[in-house]
Length: 381
Ligand code: UD1
Ligand code: UDP
Image 1 (cartoon, rainbow, N blue to C red):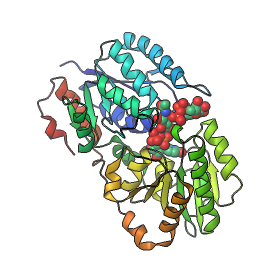
Image 2 (spheres, rainbow, N blue to C red):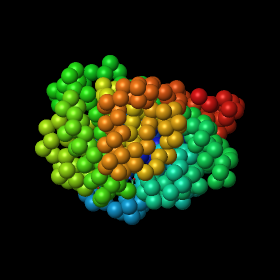
Image 3 (tube, rainbow, N blue to C red):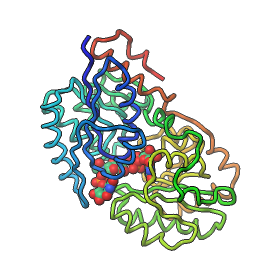
Image 4 (cartoon, protein in one colour):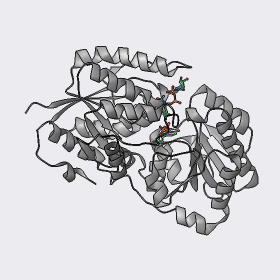
């Protein structure tokens, strides 16, 4: 049989980290002709991931600009990708998750009548404005896609509830596959991380970037973090600040100048996963960190009003802290002062699979294209 021509499209840091192991898996299999098109919705943060995994994309739409709006990203990806698809003519387009790159790429493929496979399908909060615009993006991608690679059984049930019942494969999350490449022996390459004292300080790694947290929620989160840093002199907060100018300005204004808060440049995936593995706990509004930290046995305070990742909350390693200053402060304080609570949360649990999501997705694609006769049940973690 002719190799299946699969085009992976991605453009932001988290998509790149989670698509990288899939790209590498498909690339090394003779049954696939695998190509990558990056939109560069993120430029530097994407390039850092590409370098980390040594991936050289076949196409680069290079769309990022400062102050980019959702309409700008959508229309430039849609226009750019439509030409690329006409030229490359893939049999299948794979998109990841819920970014605007993923939504616009799925739509562009649909317009060219090319089937779409959705990696990390079926996450939902059921609140169209939170996360914004991601909840709407992933719902629309679910409707457009013909193949759905759901990390967990809960994600598959969410799709069923929307009457999406065909071609759903439960695979685990590819982020666990990515961590097999990144965590390694845990040693740091950057001098900045090597200079941080992990032996006499308890390090809290934090990130915060979500659009729905812009404004008062983000300010309230930062005030809580500042109070924690000022109340515990044996704590160091390490915050690799997202390159969004809004986030950077707010972080510098509210957290700058506090001696035990380190505002640093974004890290590449290897350094980030190693930093997390050496941290005492994690405070974040990120999606990906909610999957990675439990696998590393690190408690996570999620500084959002909701989460589409209830599995780790149920497992007890993730606590939904919300965005109120007092509640975030109280929960962080509890983790720093109550060993029983800390130990209860600091258990390595991994509801997101066994690190073999990528081979499963590869097999599921071959099954869907008639190149093997395994059944969908055979692909479960
Ligand atoms: C995007 C995704 C969000 C994801 C996040 C991961 C959408 C609508 N949002 O949000 O789902 O959680 O990425 O980080 O798809 N910038 C740079 N260099 C970079 C990256 C960003 O300078 O390498 C700056 C640019 O000024 C850019 C801004 O950050 O305009 C915002 O980037 P954008 O992709 O629009 O939004 P994110 O908040 O990053
Ligand atoms: N990450 C990284 N460097 C950083 C901060 C985060 O490599 O400085 C990684 C993190 O480990 C996770 C992913 O980026 O794999 C999450 O991306 P982000 O928080 O930007 O987006 P989200 O997951 O919220 O969509």
